[in-house]
Image (cartoon, rainbow, N blue to C red):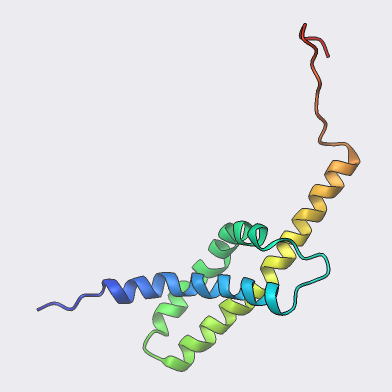
Length: 117
């Protein structure tokens, strides 16, 4: 009978992403910054950021799957990235959005009923 690798492949795929989001939660709960964005914003921005950070580490995690120490170090690095990178990225994007709105680059156009500006 062939062994079923679905469970182990699912763990290899999802555990690093869960660890990244655990890092976001740890940073938000334990030591948030003074201009820390809301947790929901960090989670939403964490989707593309986690793909950029975790995907390159998936082959490392897969090769370390049999070695508990190497697997723990890899997961710790992913958690650390979730703690540091994500809040910094959200804060900078929020700052850029505020600067753009203050600078007047994002303007709304009010059109009258007759189609004139």
